[in-house]
Length: 325
Image (cartoon, one colour):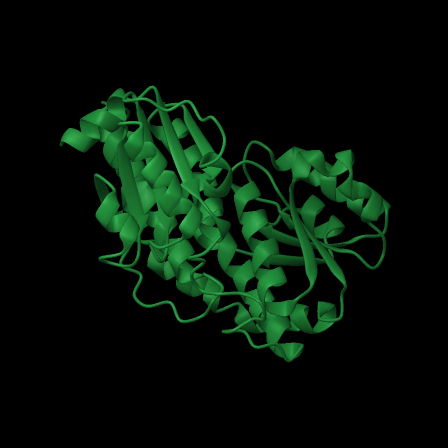
């Protein structure tokens, strides 16, 4: 309970990670602020370790790494330890350096992940971050009804994941249509922005197609200049408070002849009219949606990579664990 109390008493929580783990950390930061109400900063470990971060005993630093050996993330842990603050690790590898050198932590128990591009570890990291956030919310006396509702929905998420995986063949059809594209743009808002980043990263990693993830609201601040009939745009069009804004983004894409692949949990007539393709997902709680929305993006990257003859498990120039700077 000591670490729980320290987290709840923190003035700030830093989440530090690299790559896919950083995308999970972004969602974790949103979860902690939404459910617990503690200010949270998410930083690339490679930046956190070198800049003059404000950390003291009233700060908590959470390090997220599948391998537990990522050089920059481990350096961030050591910097936090030197500052005398609580350090927490969220790792997959039991006995790893980050697991040993942090004050407390959680193993994600995803099992061995053979492929270089992280997929199931990302899902497991999100699940752990959700559970930690819910635990802290309970300890802080936040809405027990909300916590119970999310836990109940989380307990049944496996069946919904299977429903998404069952759409693999239709996503393969999409992959056939877009396998020769030179560029992709991924757009999302709120909890779906980090998912868009992760989808773009997966496509880059295993298919070698240039892809960029962007906050949908920022599209007009640059990326819109790239949109034409040869630019597929994956849009996270979930039915939440930003839905109408996302529809507006899609209208702007279509006005420039871009091709829209929409990921949606509700298909309304306006979206059906605008999007070239829709990947429909089952409904779930808004905070749990990233567990579902990332899957079609992973499948799209996988199918495109296979069609292009790429080595999915061992993409060029990449290592499973970045243990050197």
